[in-house]
Each structure stands twice: as C-alpha cells, then as structure tokens.
Length: 474
Image (cartoon, rainbow, N blue to C red):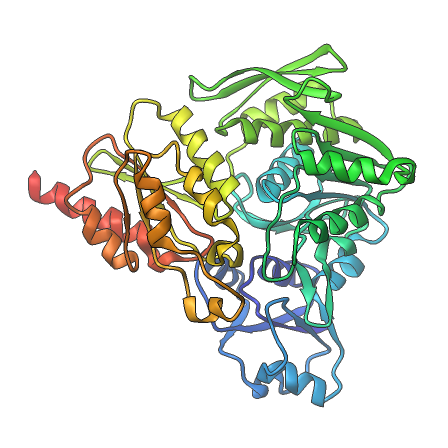
C-alpha cells in the first residue's frame, strides 16, 4: 500500500512511517516544522518528506492517509483527502491494526517518564530474548532508533494520553490493546485538551479498564492520583495489580539508593523480601522507579533476574533525556525534554545528585501547551530549586497561546525564583540567552537546557561559542 502521513515529523508519526516502510509499504509524508532527530531519521530511511501542506501532495491519491493529531480542519491536505473521499486513519489506529492486534502488548503510560520507561523496557526485553517490536516517542540510544518491527509476539509502545486526531479526541493509548499497562504517575497536564485533573484521571481509568484478567496493571504507588484512580475502580479492576514505588506500602519497593558513582545503585524488595540489587547509568530516583516498573513487567514475561540486572546496567538512555550534548571549555551542555514543572524539578534534582559540587545553570523554554499557559505559574517557582542560576526564554508563540487562555508570566516567575537567592533572568530567545551566557560560563559549569522543541539549536550554538573561546584563550 501507499501511505501518506500528514504531519510526518511528529515523534510517533515519524516512527510509524519507518515501521510501515519496514513492512514493505511505500511511504510519503509532509510537514512544516522539521528538525532533528526525527527529520534526520526519516532522511536516513530515504522517506520523502514534502515541505509544507499542499493538496497536490495527494496526487496520485495514496491508498491511505494518516492524519497526525496536530492536523486541524483547514489543512490543505486534510481537506483534499476529505473532498476526494480517500481512506484516512489516525496514527494510533494504524499502529493497532498493523502491528499490535494478536500480539502481547506492553503499554507504558503516565504523565512523566513514558519515553524513558518504554526505552528501558525495549532494551530489557530485547536482552531477555523476546525480540520485541517497539514504538517509542524518542530515540533509544541502545538501538539508535525510535521503532523496530520484528516477527515476535511482543510489542512495546509508549502510551500517550494526548488526543488521537481531530476526528478522535480520545487518548492514543486507548488503541493499544495492553496485556500489561504501566502507569508511572498521574498529574494534570495537556491543559489545551484536558479541562481539569478529573478529566485526566478519567482517561487513565479507562486505560486501566482495558487490561485483561490475565494481564498486569503496574501502578506507581508514589503518585497519589494513581492510588485514587485505582481506588475508584475498586472491584471493577479485573486484572492483577502490581504496585511499585519508594513508599512502604508498595508491593515492589526501591531502597538503599546510591547516586555517588557513575552508576546509580538500588535494592528491590517484593512484599518485604529482598528481590535483587541493580544499577543503572540513569540519574535520579524517578528513573530508578522507571527501572522498577520495567523489572516487574520483565518478570511477568518470564525474564530472569540476572538478565534484567545486566540489561539495566547497560542501558544508554534516550536522546534528549539528560543527554550530554558536549563539553567545551570545561562546561558540560545537557539537553533535556522536561517541560512540566514536576519533570523540570526531577531533572534538576537528578543532575544535582550527579554533579553535587558543580554550578548548575538551568535554561528553560516554555514551549508545551501546559508550560505556555498559566496553569503551573506557582509550581514552576519551586521547580528550579536545585539550580544555581536560572534563565527563561519567552513563551513560545505567545499570541497563539493567548487564544487558549492566560499565558505564563515569565517576569513574575523570575521574580519568584530570585526571591530564593539565586540569579534569575528572563530573556527573549536563544540568541539573547547565548549572549548573556557568553561571559558568564566558566569551567565546571553544568548547563541544563530544557525544552520540548528545537529551541533554535541553542545547544550546538553554545558549544560552538565555547569552542571558539577555548581556541582564542589557547
């Protein structure tokens, strides 16, 4: 078949394009916001990405049009597909019917940690000999890709709670037929589509209700809202419940955490009995909990502890998750996808644990819908507690954000952060941030740049500036 993907450079859409090509289909696509890593991945696969949206991109008509969830009515290609009465589907529908149905599916969900946990699961199950297919919302460094298609009975997928398409406003994860569902945590997010926390909780309750009686629900017990949703289901939860966390009443617990070395170490207990000791290159307690969720899933699928232990120790992380992009002039530049205040806080806390004696500079771009709006105005003030120096970019596309409601007040946020006794500045864009940092950076600094977008290639530009300064000084 010929598939054409409208919005092909979205993380899930780009991965689906590669999966369909791996199945022998002819794949084309279009997008107007193209940046790495997805653009480079598609180029490496030889998939033709057409710039912009034009009705002529659907000539000759493809067998199926896949409509990205960011594509609205009025998009020229979508309108052409409707006018021509072409077959169209959502990304999630195609994944379900082409790749998941009939297989054993692990769906990784939750407000935070989905991409990392899915990547850990793919690696552990791979090392355990299950040869799983997978679809991840990021590039897993152990594989160098965000997807894989195999002939095995196992499929691992990141379960996004964001809506599916303009014609399907339910969460994507409702399509993924979970045998095992991991729900790491639940918080309010995606303020552009969920009116309140109750709506988010309802979405996750519906996911939990999909897990069959012979499956597993692996629930993050440190999250109060996960507990609430499970409690609300009561006798209507028809699957086996496995709770995990650092809290004492979780069935599976982490303890004895040690972040002092190159590898983070932790102990796992099950119902009070020691189950094993593990280590991982990942930083922060939140990542150890991600590992624990995968340990439970791997055990359910019959992988032995020694294999799990070896796989966790060799996991290489995900691109854009505390990823070291380079070091110049003694300054370490780190790229992270964090945008929700909890993710910002935990990322910085993890970096503080890894680099306890170094100056930690946080650079943040409010780019996701929830960060652009004022819903987390107060929460962000405390999210930067572990940073020594804070820089905020302007709200991305603030005029469009204003159409959704009141936007984040970066000036007020800077004032609130400054009250904590640390330098904090609001600057317009990446260029101004680079100019501000040029004379400020010194050997030993750790620079954590957090955005869920391209941020005008700020990482590469800062490394180039530092390299130039090093050349001049030498």
